[in-house]
Every structure is written in structure tokens, then in C-alpha cells.
Length: 147
Image 1 (cartoon, one colour):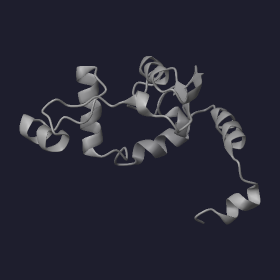
Image 2 (cartoon, helix red, strand yellow; image 1 turned 180 degrees about the vertical axis):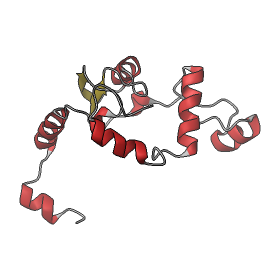
Image 3 (cartoon, helix red, strand yellow; image 1 turned 120 degrees about the vertical axis):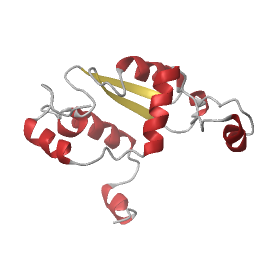
């Protein structure tokens, strides 16, 4: 993945490119690769029946039960040109999660555009949703924050 693209700001992209890592753990990267390779959204494969049985109680690796998500409202913000969270996979998971309520597809964005895009207007959509779901008055939210 390269943050430099026609959708992203070149100055901000250079800053992101200068960072030594993605912020993801090695296990996360391996898990992503397993999902990509098998096409099945399941728990991490520890590489042997013995290790998987120790972790899961069976050598069969369980799928991740997206349909069990019941109490968390989920909104999707998807870049049409995202190679990691592509529209096909995100639409699939959106349909599996009963509490998913909003699917936003942005035509001129890839994975990095959410950090360094030329067009950051998606943040207005995020702000509008946060306002709609915020049940506290601003003063109360500040008082109850961690800061």
C-alpha cells in the first residue's frame, strides 16, 4: 500500500510514508493474509491442530460471528479504491451485521485517503453522525470525558 495516489495530498502522504510501520501488529497482518488467502472470515489460525485446539477447543477454526453483533450501531466509511477494506468485502460485512445502519462509499478515496486525502469532506458525514448519536449536552460530555 502506498499513500501516494491521485486522491491523496502529496505533502501529507510523504509524512505518512516516512513512518516506519503501519501500526498493525504482526499477528494482525498475518491474520489479514489468512483471510485473504482462504476467503473465509474466521479467527486466527495458529498453524497447527494442537495450537488451534488449545485456543479454540477444536482444531476447526471458528468463523467470526458478525451476525452476533447486536447492540453497537455501526456506520461504514468506504473508499471506492481501497485495497484493504474494499467495497466488495465491506458491503458483504455490512449485510451481515444487523446494527449496521449507514454505508458511505466515497468515489475518490483509497485506504490512506481517510488520513491524507485531498478531499476530507467525509469528516462532515462523521461529525453529523456523532452529533445525531450524542445523547449528552456538550458540557456534560466534557465533564465526563477522560481529559
